[in-house]
Length: 142
Image (cartoon, rainbow, N blue to C red; front, side):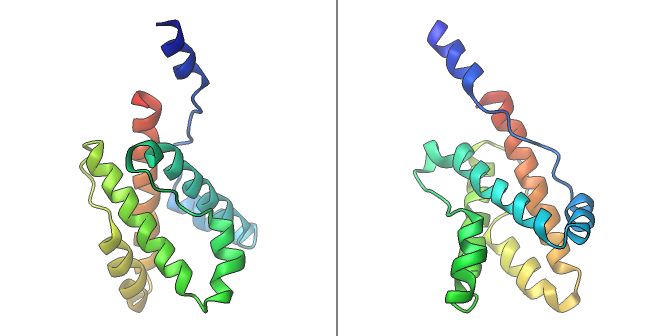
């Protein structure tokens, strides 16, 4: 029983206050640095939350953004966001959280939605909301 208590105490508490307004506003003020930091946190958080259940590992966002995006002419970020979105959707389902998010959300809102300008903002809102829900569930139950 003492070992279980130590495991629970040593577990990192994940932040659950990601918002679209802060993402956009601080992104403008920091000249794009804040979104990179948040997406890096999301890539780390999904590995913490889902890694022991699905056995997958999401590549750190900084590698995708700074290295692979220009080397592959933008292909790797598309694949990365697709896989991240699918993994978040799978983890939401596994935890029994009723929220519609997945790879189709990325393709419909972020890619096709860019034609109506507000689509990427809707995708980002849904991504941040999903991560808040997952982090809250992880903080409560592990």
